[in-house]
Image (tube, rainbow, N blue to C red; front, side, top):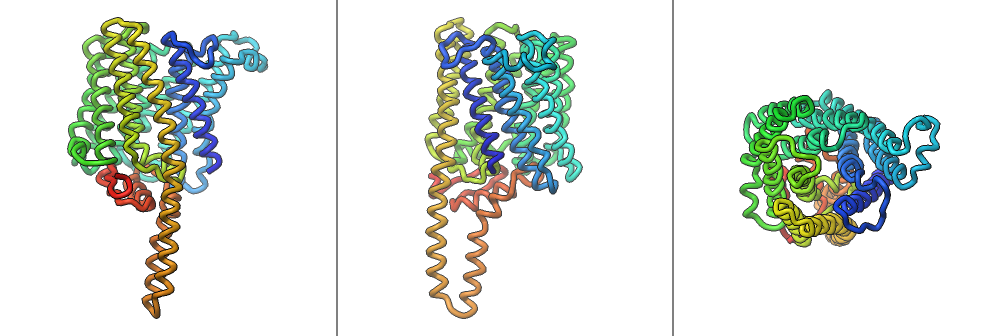
Length: 458
């Protein structure tokens, strides 16, 4: 647990630095200013923050598949190390230049080379984890995520070679989108119907094949990439149970709204690639494609699945709260303003939309941490009350009835410990989710990966 907490804190610091770089990138004043920090926004957010969190969740999941699987934590540790090396190399350039191996490398390139080496190691470790999980139990959803990690490895190797982020963004996009779609495929495989896993695996394979084509022939590669992405997202969206649970209440409705919005934003980026092809590196269309994926799709999916994934990592419940609607709404509003302002070429409004998104991400971070900390205390108080009431019932029980009460209560009270020790992995994500939700003492019902919260969550 201390390792996971330390890695989460490092990911949080990376997120804050990435937001600082985002403000510098659009010409806004930021708390920390450094030469080259604005250009580090993309790598810090995708590999330093999201990549580390993905690797950490996979390392926790590996425990349920392989004994003595401590080596799985190499991936998140390397991801966090890469972020630290890049940040320190930019803000304190002399620190990296003093290393003997970097004496012959220019001062401007050394942070990128160090960070890319660590992030390549993280992607190799992540790919190895997927391979081990596949060997234990084959699942198409795991193959999709294996392809995602390979795309992430190739994308980071290309960045290390000196290619621009605009050239290799499709590889970074594939890391995030295919990872999320793979997890969504596993969580909702029953509602997606027969053959869904094979279809989406085939669609993700076409998307992976389109990645090198975007480098060799952008006029062909980008429309092919957009078509593959649109078909895969459309397949998931049209068969996802979120279309029906959007009419529910509480957490179920919130998760459905986040996912449907995410599908819409990813489809918008796919359509842009189909119609326009390769967007320019410095243009509002490029800004639309990048942030429709990273903010519109990825962060919407992160918020939607946080009540499922976070408890598996921190072993504490993350209860639903209506404040999450405000965070998600602010995120969508900022992105929408940013895109509309881009088409109207209004720099002031574009910067305002960027600022709203920065505030939204900060609010998301604060809200999730608050719900985990104080929500866990509230659940602990409920568990303590149950324990006291159970003890009182035992004194009133006699004979064999007393033994049955002890056995039954013992099973109930052990649910929390068992659930907290059960990590979330692809082959049993739904079972882990069911166990976690029982431990929260709420009336939460798993419906193909969705959480329907009633009672205290309402």
